[in-house]
Image 1 (tube, rainbow, N blue to C red):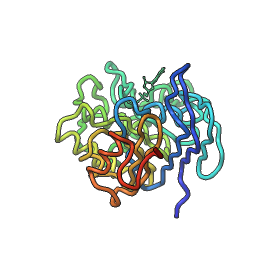
Image 2: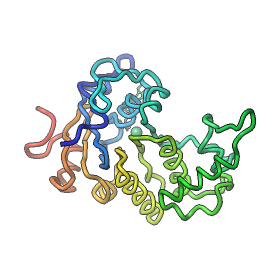
Image 3: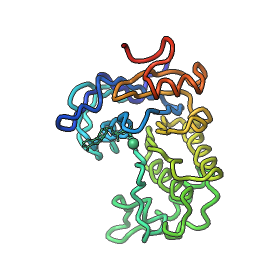
Image 4: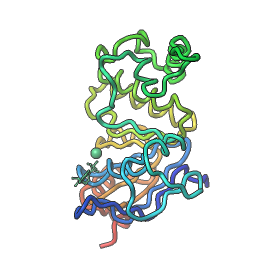
Length: 251
Ligand SMILES: Nc1ncnc2c1ncn2[C@@H]1O[C@H](COP(=O)(O)OP(=O)(O)O)[C@@H](O)[C@H]1O
Ligand SMILES: [Mg+2]
């Protein structure tokens, strides 16, 4: 079997007296979509923020391509090729698509910005992801639909030779057609060989695109399974009670 790109072992995380993650193991594989599911407050966002270097872990180990690594801040994560698309997207409305995609990592020719190069690469990245709904990369992000914004945020994440892209609830605010487009994009990322983590509440989304499902229950990893090995109702049980048949957290 493949080595996971990322493997978490025994991760613990508290915020002051609030113990959020309890000895969590979590593995993510190249070329696969891993759905990270769990009820509100289960610790999904906290877990990905630990991977992304936003939150230091209290205990446990993070392996990247089999080697132990320290991820002390978001820059460490980015250098490993880990990109996180957060729920709030962090795009700037007043800037255009190119400016957003290169924000803070602008390309320069000497002391001037390499506008042509950035525009070309932004366009090529979107085309490489078969994104055809965006008319011009010089459109302001304010003028984009929710689905298009999500697409730009994802394209921004894959621009940097990333190996792992983590999407925190990318379809939560989208309608049916836009959700479909984003899910197709998620699938294409994995088909290109990236490891994709999809946080989602929506069982239809999860079963439509994921290869594996990891279910968090009250900060504990209840189960990590292949999507083809479980039913919708088993996953719902894991989310709501932490158990389903032989699967789940120890009583
Ligand atoms: N910065 C923080 N400080 C204190 N508590 C936090 C912080 N971030 C998250 N939590 C708590 O951790 C728990 C898990 O939250 P979160 O990871 O956002 O869950 P999820 O993304 O699964 O909904 C919640 O009880 C939340 O209140
Ligand atoms: Mg969350």
